[in-house]
Amino acid sequence: VSTSYIGVKSFVTLSSVRDIQVIISGEVLNPGPYSLNGNSNVFHALTIAGGPSEEGTFREINLIRNGKVIESIDLYDVLIYGRSGFGPRLRSGDLIFVKPVLNLVTVLGGVKRPNVYELKEDENLSTAIGFANGVSAKANLDSINLINFFEKVPKPLISTFSSRATASFMDSKIESIALLISDLLKLGNSFFIDNSMSDLVKVSLFILFTQL
Image: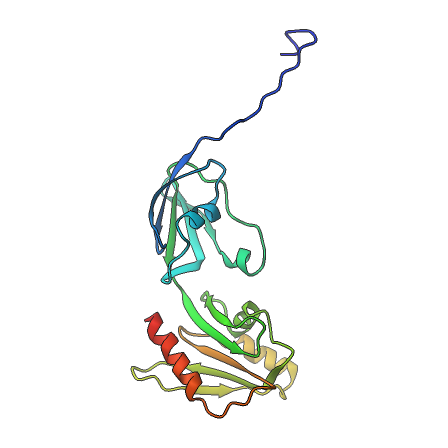
């Protein structure tokens, strides 16, 4: 405009963004088609749909465009590590697909953030402790118990690793341990007196059967 009219300046303001239509499917609380703001990303869409269900993964959420997966998003990058990777801006016709949950393990005891965590195939015991924000100041590293339930009538199989071993041995040992679904990792607390394993086993059985 300034080149055609002397002394005239023009300004353009975007007052609104056209809505887009996307489909959110798979293991989410409220699957279906949604109308979203044109500036929306995968995280916005999942929030509108209620997020992954109890059977849905947080670790591999696919953005499908024209029949191809253009982005696979791991929500742990946002929720645990604080990285702001929400994927590309959504377009009309996009499909967001939430896969079934992967390997769930439980980390309890002397960690800073005890909870149930989801591990990928290439992740191990060290990864699980990292998700739990590491060991707490009151952790008793002489008492690290890994309990596996693998039979129809589960029996606890307890493997104990002592912190009195050399640091290099412990690091290699922890890195080599792959956790399986419904495994329960318990780090002892120095102030905690465990009179029996019965309560822990009951909690573990509850977690196991609720995930089957």
